[in-house]
Image (spheres, rainbow, N blue to C red):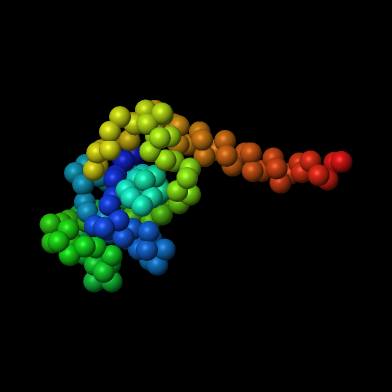
Length: 147
């Protein structure tokens, strides 16, 4: 399994709407992507943040399902020939993994599609786990109940 970093422009693919309304979605197929790979999606303006962790469920699809084409810009859609099917593993709040956070943790440039560096992957996973632990502690040990 490989981890990938993808930059998505909302004007080309309305991924936010698509992933809210559909259980799976087809993205343009990138070279070397295989089933069970993970794709971390950075959404450009207006979000400017890493927002999704997706899992590839199928590859090399030549036809985009009609229900999914409405989420694509027609010009961009006509440039694509192969798709991979993805499902959401995780959706992140837009203020969690901002460009500033990613750059401080090893991201050197916003490529359209590239392997996710181990340094950036670790910072995302560690930061997320750290946040989950903090939330659990607040729920399990509320200070107001002690005093």
